[in-house]
Length: 117
Image (cartoon, rainbow, N blue to C red; front, side):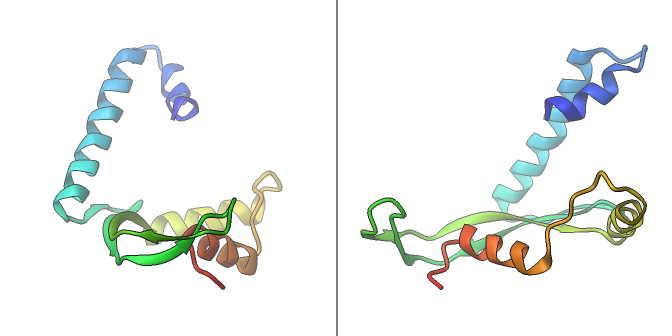
């Protein structure tokens, strides 16, 4: 988040402490809404929601021992239409944006959520 905030610090009328307070207040409100089970939509940017993952059996990756993983809520973010358009437009014109092939992204997501495939 520090690199994100640095862009605001170049503005002469904005103080670092004020920008940090505003950003932290917004993030705290999003987190509180998700904890209540609410959905938070930022038009043009995307929507945050919490999804409930059921209990499952997993494996300790280091030892291979089977472990029980309890039910938990996980944060989910879906990009908005405007953001997708801008990302795709900028990715097509910029060589500095590194995109991961879909199949690799899909595998990383599945692995990250503990699938045993």
